[in-house]
Length: 298
Image 1 (cartoon, rainbow, N blue to C red):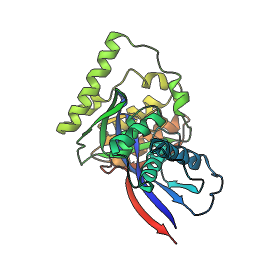
Image 2 (image 1 turned 180 degrees about the vertical axis):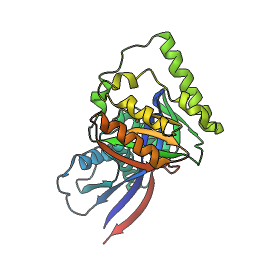
Image 3 (image 1 turned 90 degrees about the vertical axis):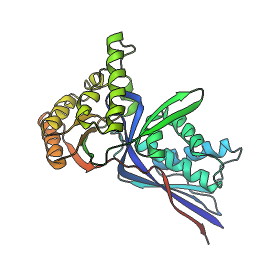
């Protein structure tokens, strides 16, 4: 008999301005990753997503001291834009890790799974948000991912402007500064702390200041010159904050009112600069990766 497991995983927005590689917020856009173990050899994976899912599954089998079965097949579907800084690769990998773990009858805890996900991703922010949901503060420490969930005020809307242009993470990281001055480091540390405090206490009026950044956004604005136009348009339309989502190119605004007006203002500002795209109005997602199907095949 075969077996199939499907996992639903949220998108995520990393950094939130100053929290570079440490903050990740799950969003209510989802992917579904399915691993199926047939009783016959699986066909060669057709897409890059399927290849990435099987590579993630491989990490679980290796960790368990097992060989990944040749009969294992992967499938992916979802509405997370790819190459836009919305955690599509983290969702795919986390989904495959959780599904593979379930196929092996869950030998690994979520804390072990997040380490595997962070190793595959190269950083833990999107991985922690995708696996656990909500707003996660995640750091590496002695081979482990130490993470703490932060309460997210329920009134928040997440408004995304998603440009047509991609900004692959690898390329976007190449423009980052090799070092920061002491005042720049203090600037980002203070605002990252303020952001966590503002979320935890519901002090949403502090988000505008708390999402300022001097580490990565100025550098990445050289790739996406409309970035600050879009941010300023969102703020002028009533958003509480706006920032580059992850490595880009999507821009995320947080607001408690008029999300459609914020979305239109962001789209208009980007289009005027020659960067067309789509908008998505959604919300933060408290639920992380969840097994939604686990059944035996005849």
